[in-house]
Length: 270
Image 1 (tube, rainbow, N blue to C red):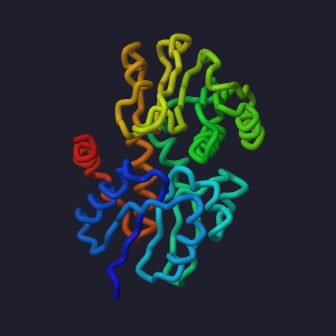
Image 2 (image 1 turned 45 degrees about the vertical axis):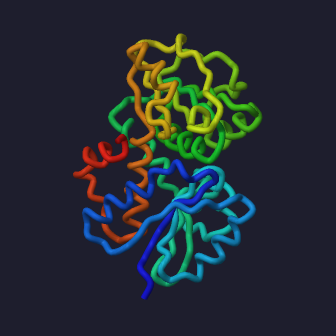
């Protein structure tokens, strides 16, 4: 029998740290399986799923830019992710050969904020793609106040506010930040090989939190600017490791050994 494996797919994909994360956990637990990165172009996504569906060694895949929304039309959706978050980041092939999608991004994003009281607090979300949907879903559950979405297409941002029942504003990327308790960059801006994210954090109060889900580079220009102001920051590894842990258990049937998180972060930041 072929060795079990899972993978991460996206376009681009070379920057992904997911193979290092899952490989670290597989080694710690002594599981004889593999985890790899696979470059999948948008036009090849349906073919990719069709091929993997018939491979009994395939346990599933993590999904990154730009496939999280397109995946909704290609796999089963037992948890009704389409009508809740509206984006899938984890695809699983179970023992019976059924292929279904779920979303571990929302919980992974929210984990480092779980002890922060966001009830009624104003927030800013930059971007309106698949990751933004998971973030907005989590923020709505946390009972945040007004949410400002900054996006190239304000109409797309307005649609997401309506989808998640949030009050706020949808503005162009170039709009100045309003005072907010939390700023989250969910876009690819600032990622290695992508255009920079140009935003002025001056309007933020001293107790604001700046959270950038980009992890390549780990210290983005946004986080450097926030640290220079003495603001609390959360980097992209927090969400990446959190969502990966939930996916790992779905793929390999054992909880990720989170007691080794410190060593894992050291490995990922070498």
